[in-house]
Each structure stands twice: as C-alpha cells, then as structure tokens.
Image (cartoon, rainbow, N blue to C red; front, side, top):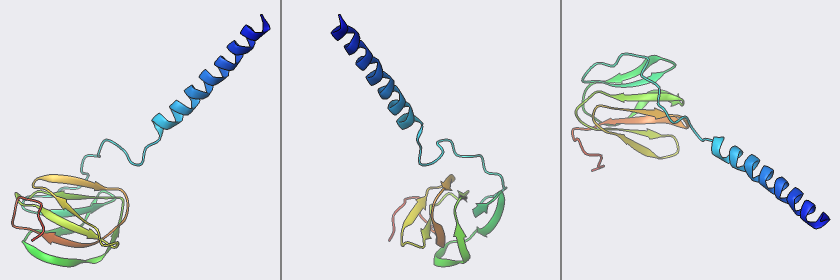
Length: 125
C-alpha cells in the first residue's frame, strides 16, 4: 500500500512541475503581439519615423539609399502611407521592407538609412 501512495506523491510532484514549467514557457514573449495604433499623424504620400508618439523624420519623395540625419534607436514605428514600398536599414547592416500603406513596429536595433522606392514590390534592385 505504501508503494501506491508513494507513486501518487511522485505523480503529483511531476504534474505540478509540468504545470509550472508549461506556464512559464507559455507566458514568455520576445515582443508584444498587438502593434500599437500610430500616435502621430502621417499624411499621404509620406513615410514617417515615429518615436515616443512624435514624427522624428518624414520623407515624401522617392529617394535612393540615404542616411537618416541621426541614428534612430528602437522602439519606434515606421509608417508608410505611400502606394509604393520603402526600405529602412539598421546599424548592423540589415534592411527591412515596409509594403505600401503599412506600419512596422521596430522593437529592437537602431535605424540608420532609408530608401523610398517607386515599386510596390519589396525587391532590392
């Protein structure tokens, strides 16, 4: 009879451990899942870089790759109201496309460059 009671105790401990570990894994996230609504206005045909609810940089013409006036650390939003795609680059050499009429929330990194394209497709040419 003690063997059955002992195995029930072990099972209870294992079940509690699995519950605790499962709960910790399920709640850990790298970034928020719901992007915030833009806090700053960005009118067509602009591309806006928004930091702390304010437009920091705004572009409204097609441009080749160019450096931002100053480095822009995350978190921030990139709002593309244009009917064409745009690109932004970070200080680690990465680049990300923002499709037409889209918003991207950048949670990590530092932005360094921008390119306002004349194409709707996200292709670097």
